[in-house]
Length: 32
Image 1 (cartoon, rainbow, N blue to C red):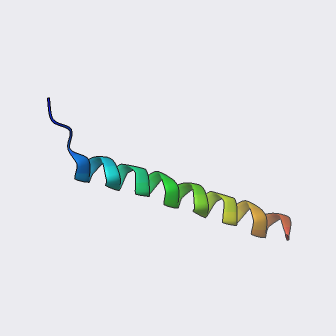
Image 2 (cartoon, rainbow, N blue to C red):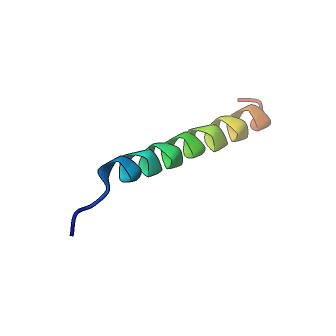
């Protein structure tokens, strides 16, 4: 069974961007 590497990489990149966006929003919200 072969994995769909492109979809897997896009999924990981999406989570990474989402995490960065949330952390930046929290930092700016706290006035850091």
